[in-house]
Length: 360
Image (cartoon, rainbow, N blue to C red; front, side):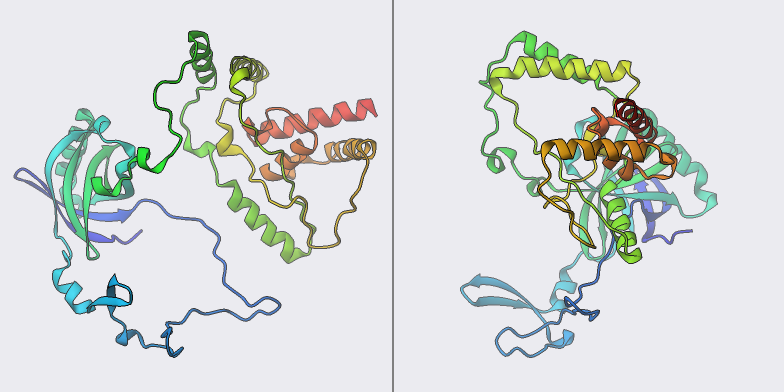
């Protein structure tokens, strides 16, 4: 079982519940060490005096706030410790707000709140049920690890969740950050709006988080395994995206709607392409061994494409990963491949392979 990162009490009104705080999310990012090229020697970071070049002990380091060119106000760690909020023992809910009233941009990190002992299960369950039925969140100030947070406590499926939130002055004004935001004076026809709405409706999906994975991380791990085993790695760069011509907007919307309806009739999923798209590598093809020969003619490339499709379709595709199947689908120019799951990619590659064998 995970260890809590904080323990204390949750209070609202005169009701008090001893609780424990647990981290709700984790990152699976592949971690690399820095090495000197051509060696296995680790590269280390050191704290060095930029004037003398000598290393400085951690105990001799203080913090400085720059108030002018080379002029600093020096603050000792002990001085910061004296004014820090310290460790709060209480999550004191000051009020409850409708969840729909909170813009998601204010949410930062999520924690689980659990009862600190089975004997507090009843009052914990009562608060959870009441919050679920009201669809509200409790707002509270909370201190942890020397920092003060604005938090929202909400209930979801019999569990309390605590969300740390950004303060209002931490959220940037989009009109100051983005130069080319529409000003509301843009004109479009009712037909264009209706077609865009129909396209959205056609591509509507049910939210299933298990349908989405970090395919880039999978590719990084595959790259590492291939390089370790001495296998050749080929990364393909897809065609660049082109902006929609405003003059042809209605035509593009209609064709997009027809494509979406056609994919739906063919049994293709309506999941968003962005979450399933295999990341593209810059620089075309790369190899850990000999470079691929270049300068093929259009006819030669087409013949090679047929050979690739024919030989790969005969393989046992069930052993391939989704990124590998997506690469095959890209080579075969299979439409709507970015919206397909693994099984659908396999079926599409098999169908395309059969077609190429029939042609050849």
